[in-house]
Amino acid sequence: MLVNIGVLAFQGSVIEHMNSLSRLKDVNPLEVKTLSELNTVDGLILPGGESTTIGKLLRDFELAPYIIERINMGMPVWGTCAGMILLARKIAGGENPHLDVMDIVVRRNAYGGQLDSFSTNVSIPEIAESQLPLVFIRAPWIEEVSEKVKVLCKINDKIVAARQDNMFVTSFHPELTENLEFHKYFAGIVAHNMLEKKTSCKK
Ligand code: GLN
Image (spheres, protein in one colour):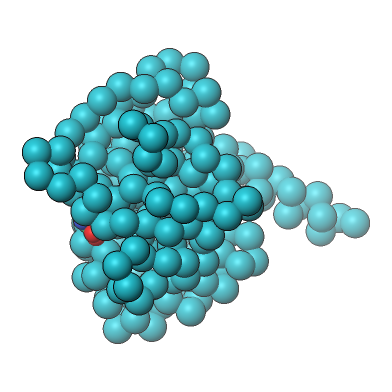
């Protein structure tokens, strides 16, 4: 089944996500900046970048309420790094949340100093059997989750990947690696969601 996956295209690692998606069969990647573009996608990636900038553009372009509505209606969404910050209900330190939909508390630029940017390899059984390369760039981590959130990966006791129903977040940037497992995983969530919708329409 062909799925349309959008990448919010205001700022950040948009081209890199588009490139990764275009290497998957059965995925039609689309850049999303407007409501009509948002309406054509079955799932949406919020890329890494600068969360304050992307959050401001979401408000300026008046797209935020529509994205929130689609997420609440079940549209799969994947926030990478800044995208994860956009989805959080709370940003540690008192900054106002942006889309305010996922039960996570995030800390921006959590890996200060020398660990500011780094990479590592881990195994995340939910995503793939193989080792996965993780690239962190001025990354946030998740400090708290509600019981609705499934923790998928921790590094040194800090949560760096999680899922709550249709919402998936990673502190790191799979689109900056050659590895496609995270994009395949998200495309699987989108395809599964579409199949479920089709089944429920028949009832
Ligand atoms: N430091 C950025 C922020 O706080 C996130 C960095 C990234 O997306 N690579 O928004």
